[in-house]
Image 1 (cartoon, protein in one colour):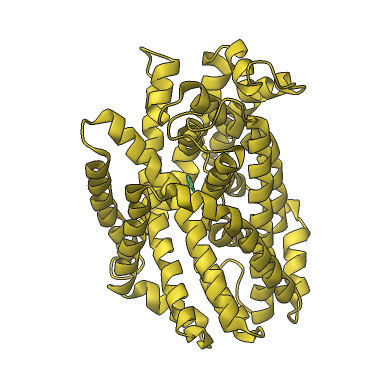
Image 2: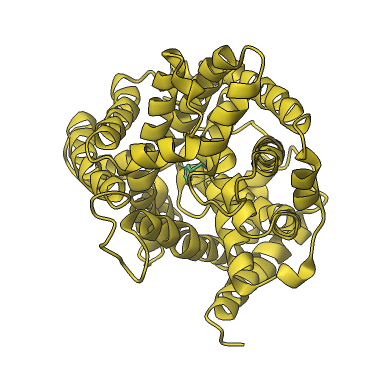
Length: 443
Ligand code: PHE
């Protein structure tokens, strides 16, 4: 086994699933699906998972394990004396952009965890409660900082291994919690309106914005297009099956996103909220569900704890991309680098947080800073990263090397290998370019 490597296939798989399953599934997916009209978005999303995200995930796994380095380092090693390493640098910038707003939402999960512990979920006006909270100047800032410091503490003390082991129990627990919540949510009056919203597509809804949202959300949810999977894959043992890891991760990630929507949207319709409520959707809907549920306040404690840890295992993977890169690129120690990055993030995160309250009038291209960071990463940087990664694997790497890595030097049979190469060479890059041109209204 490699130094610092994951101890087993389960370890590697859990870390990658831990990175993938997070706020993207539970917080973001339901509100993006809600904003985009539900079913049409979801069908397209599932399609993208199979034909775009799966090949991309395999590409990142191959690149990372082949090179055994951080995101930028991997490109340098596999394509020395070229500019391909810029792809890795873009990933580092993307990780920084995402973490700036992700840690703000991480702070919100801490707030809701604290209120559930003090049984304060019985607030009957959940919407006003949420808005008051995110607009207040101090509390969200403090919680955002706590979230970032906790993320850094995990990387600092090396309890990452502990988290990995913990994930083994956490993911099944999260699954059971969400399943229980979905069943309860479906039993609410008018819940079927929500189910209809999620299942009955109206293809007239298909718009360039929706297609780009589905692509961005797929990449975000699977931690693709910015080097996280490359960075983690560098630690995966040579005898593990990368195809299996990719498929299981995608299936799990999808299940969590769909189940989360089955919790949120039926409840949204039942309580008379709007599905296009935006980033507050989860935080407004859940307290209402807990309020009506038998033993809801206890359920709330477990749920918000698990949500918090799921968010943490994703933010760790984001921070690791930056830390791994900085440690190689600078002469500074790992701990010094962590301190520098955390200081920078506490600043950018604070601005994101304040942009929902005191700095609300300050707009970038018509968006709050929080939204701008979100859009910049999911809609622009990650698709750009994904495009470069697919081009790298499809055109720069030798097909025989790719085969060797993916098949564990020929010991696994890969019946769909040529199909995979076709997808990364032609389909994925063309699809991403077309989605962009379409969005820019070139045609
Ligand atoms: N995939 C994570 C989530 O769904 C977020 C993330 C994006 C993590 C990119 C790492 C890299 O919450």
